[in-house]
Image 1 (cartoon, rainbow, N blue to C red):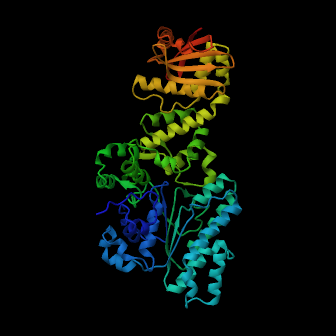
Image 2 (spheres, one colour):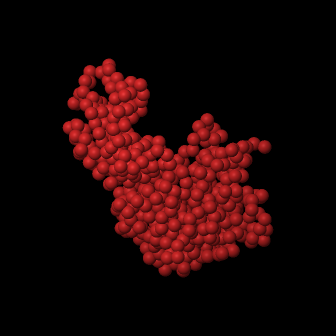
Length: 554
C-alpha cells in the first residue's frame, strides 16, 4: 500500500482523504457537538491547531450531497443512528474570514464581499431552483455582484437555502476574529466591529432559518462588542474540558503518526519541541509542527527541529508585549525561561482594542494565542502559566533578541563613545545599565560555559549593531581563539575582548583580569600582524547576573 503523505498545508477535509494524505481522526467532534447541541458554538484555539480542517470536516459531514463514503472507517462511522439522522441532511453555509486583512475599512469590506460572493457562486445551483421565485433569484444575483446588503448576506443565503431544501441551515464561520485583529492594527476597528456585529446579528441571532452555527477564532471577543444579544452562545475555550481533544494532536496520536512513518526514534525530541500545550484536561501537540516535522524527516537530511509554528504567522504580539515590559515583567520572563511557572489572572473576554491597555491583557493574549499554556489554576482564580515547549522558548528568545538589537544602536551610544575614548569606567557603567534595563531572557543555561556564551552573544550583538565596526567572533588569533575582535577603521585601532563568567560578585575583578591575561598570554594581538593597525586595546569583561566589571590594557 502506498504511504500516505503528511498533509502539509491541507485544510480541506475532502481533498485530504481523497488525495491520500495522512489523517488524524477528529470526527469524534461531530458526535460531541450533536450530543451537546447549542444554537451558536464558539471555539477559541490558537492558530495552526486544526480549526479550519475541523470546519471543513463538519461541512463534509452535514452538507446535502456529501460523499458519505469519505467517512468509512473513521470514528464517526460507528455512530450508525447518528450518521443516518444527520449525515448529508442539511444545507450548509461555510465561509472563512482569514483573508480579510485590508489596510483600510474600504478594502477590508471589499474582501468581505469577496468571501460572500465566493460562497454565493458555490450555491449557484439555487438559480435553477423551482422553489425560488424571481425576487429570490434577483437577491442571489445581487449577492454575487456585491449589490445586496452585506450585513444581511448570511441571513439572505440562509433563507434561500432553507426555502430550496425545506430545511434549516448550518452556518460555519472560520477565523472570525482575523478581520478584527487587522482592523485594530490599521485604525478602523470601530467600523469593522460594527460590520461583523451586524452580519452575525442578522446571520445567527435573528435567523429563523438556521439550525445551528459553529464559529472559530483565537480570541473570545467580548460579548458586548460582537455577540450582543446572542442567546447565550456556547463558548469553548482552551481551558474547558469539553471538546479538549479535538483540536491539536494527543500524545498517542503523535506516537502513532511517527510509528507510521518509521520515525519512532524521534519521539523524544518531537515531544520536547512541539508538545506541552494543555487544552482542558488533555495535553496536546501543535498539529502544524508535527506534520511539518514528519515531512522534513522524510524528505531531508536535516534532522534539526525547526520553528514551524512561529515562522508561519505574525509574532507581533510578542513584540507588543516586550515593548510594554517593565522590571516586574522582565523578572517574570526570567522565571519562565528557567522552566518555572508564573501566576496570572487571565481575561477570557477581550476586545482587540483593549489589548494594549495594560500588560495583564497582553499576558492574556499570549496565553490564548498559544505562546503560553497553563499547568493549573489557583484558589484565587489565577492561572499557572508556563512556556509550553522548546519551540516557543526559542521563539521568545529570538524575538526578544531581535527587538533588543533593533533598539541597541540608538540606546548604546554611551558605550560606543566610551570605547572610542578607551574609558573603562564608562564602558562598565553603560554595560551595567544595559544589563539592568534589558530582558535577560534565556541568560543562563545550566553550565558556566552556557552562561558565558550568553554574555558573549549579548556583547557581540551590541558591537555588531554599531555601523563602522568590523566585528569578528571566536576568530583564530595567536595560540587560540579570541572571543571578540573589533576593527575600527575610522580611528585606526583594534579592540580585543575576552568574556568571562563569574560565580559571584566578589570574584568579578579577578575573572576580568583572567580574561586580560588570556589575551596577553595567548598572543591574540598576532591577529593584526599583517595589518596596518598599530594600536590595539585589550579588555577583560566578567559578568555575574546583572553586573559586570571591565579591565583593560593598551
